[in-house]
Image 1 (spheres, rainbow, N blue to C red):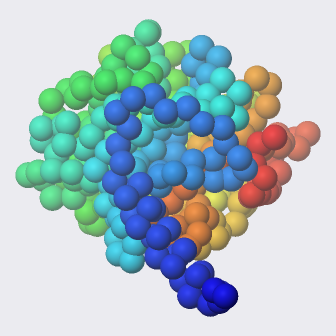
Image 2 (cartoon, rainbow, N blue to C red):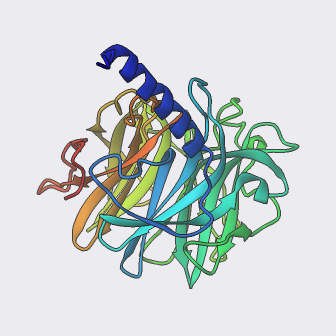
Image 3 (tube, rainbow, N blue to C red):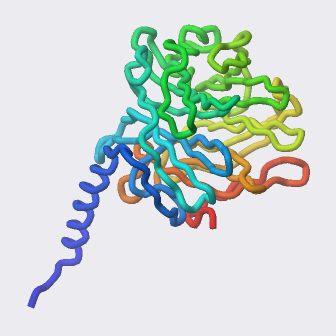
Length: 329
């Protein structure tokens, strides 16, 4: 008669799982991979953080950094970005890796938060990387004819470098988390920053600034700005304090003044960071965000993408977003 030691069996399963997940964190998509999301997180076979979204031709696209740090290590290891698309928020396709940090010849790595936006049939990807020769984080721009790439450096140099914002803060990591918004009049804006939020106009070519860098002063601001518009209201959501919650402000004008409105969601479980994207898709509003919910090896450095519904009050304010394990049904 064979007797099973339950504790030992559980331990063996965890060891096997750790090797599987460690292997998965290093995978890069070489071909399209289609899967059906089953609750949150929507991507369970690899770690992806700092999600940004775009709606284009009836599909939602999610772009995020590939967290490759294998357990039990605890640091950021992000060399490339991933792209996923879905026609219904349920069936998803991961496309081949469209961009790596070292695809920028002037960068030495670190594929931090980013966003893709379409203009005149071109897709522009604003990314955070580490500069080779200018100390600190920088923002670059890549371009493609397709939302799934491949993307290539659009400038051959950084759009934003750390020495451009020392007037406001001396830290080396304030020029991160770029987000781009194109207003109804066609004017594009770049918004970014850690500890200090910045914004600047972009030229129509989308790869040059069209004016000075200006600060936006927001209560409890840490990082991860995201701008969206609904009706006559502009919304600026952002990560707040540390560990991070999500807050937002509203304005009738993209240039402000911005009125602080409070929390959008609470701490993202066992993940110190909280990074959001807000989209309207087929008449409903959604927040895409990350947490550390893949057990037992998720966390701040092995993050996972989630999606939940977002609802508004009659006065335009946003109801507190409820993070769920069920996700979008």
